[in-house]
Length: 115
Length: 114
Image (cartoon, rainbow over all chains, first blue to last red; front, side, top):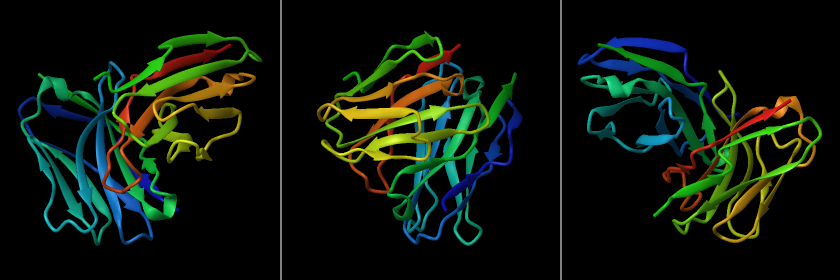
């Protein structure tokens, strides 16, 4: 079965500091994609970053980077230089062939950035 | 481009009432999805439509039906609402079902069943 685990229900970070949000996944597929989404208090889901299982380099998108450790089945999101606008829920998700390529989401981590 | 739109934004129902949540996308995407979001549980897939003319059950389909009206529109129907269906409902679409394609989400519908 496909499963995403996010063990940090809530995180605090000081403005301008870096923060890592944890995500571990479980799949028997060799080919899969890992995604991070941001959900601010307004409720919309915003796509942040993608990592393919065969990608050799860690994905980066601006201040977001994905620390992908395939052997450990982890795909942690790193946000550098946190801003107040980064306060939101963050969801890790996976697509894999064994689940019909449908998304499986983790329970989310609520990040609060302190001024 | 409006992206993915959903109506209504908010709805209050009494137990046993029915309603249809509407979703439309203007990105010419093939695949569309309905999720529900409950506190501490992330998003769970209710139904999906891999392409026009097909629909399939997701993780939590009981109590729901869907219709893929055309390539743009995918509706979710609650025939007899129950308090357990109080949730936030998201519609999403993606270009295809490849594992690298992200999903684009609508703004959500907050549903309360009394």
